[in-house]
Image (tube, rainbow, N blue to C red; front, side, top):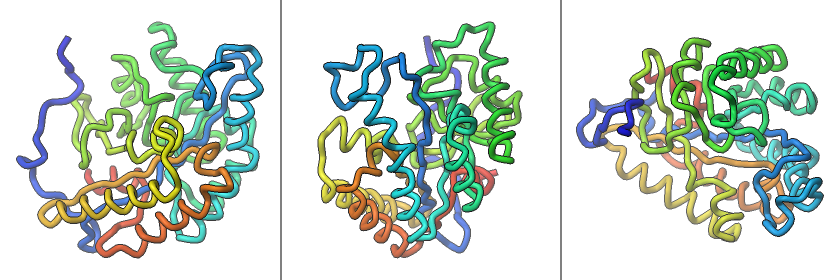
Length: 282
C-alpha cells in the first residue's frame, strides 16, 4: 500500500525555515531513557544468549544505563549546558525515580517513548492501542509533571493508527520517520514530523558498526559541518541519539564530551530541544 501519512516534499522546493537568533542549524540530544522486561529479548550486544530467559549478559548490559551510564552522560550534558530531549518509557517513572528527579531539576523536555523497550507498538492489539497510549501519556505526565508533546515509539515503531491516536491525546509531533533534515507536517491534523537520526545514533555506530570513539567524534563534526553548509538559505535540524548503556560506558565518555564541545562552540547553532523545534515551526 502507498504511504498516506505524509506527502513527498523535496527539500529544495519548500519555504525557508528561519531559526531564532539567525541560527542555521537547530541541534538537540535525544536521550533514550528506557526500561526492559527481564523475560523478553531486546537490544543485545551478544546475540548468542539473547533468546534465553533470563539473559544476564544482555540484560545486564542494558541495565548498566539506568544504574551507571545515565549519570555519566548527565555530567557531560551539564558540562556543555545541554538540556536533554528525554525519550522516556513510562515504566521508567515508576521504577527509577532518581532519574526523573534529575531530569526535572534540569528542565528536560519529556517525550513519550512507549511503556518500555521490550514491547513494540505493533505488538499492541488494535482494540487496546488507545487505552495503552493513554496510560503511557498519563503516566509520564504524573511522574514528570509535564504532559509529553512528542512521541518516539520503542524501536521507532508505530501502528497505522498511532499518529491519529497521539493527536487525539494532544501530542503534536513524532520522531519515528527519520526521513528529513527539516520538520514537516503529517497528514494528521496538528501533527508534525521532527527529524531524529538512526545514523547519528550510538547503537547504530558503536553496536551495529563497531566504530570507535574517534570515529564518533569525526562523524558528529562532519554531520554538523555539512548541514551548516547547506543551511544558508533554510535552516536544518541535527539530532544526536544516545542510549546510556552505550554512550555511558567509561571508555566512550571523553568522545561524547569532545563531540558536544564542537557542537556548542560551532557558529550559528541553536542548542535546543525537540519540543522547542516543534514549537518554533508552528
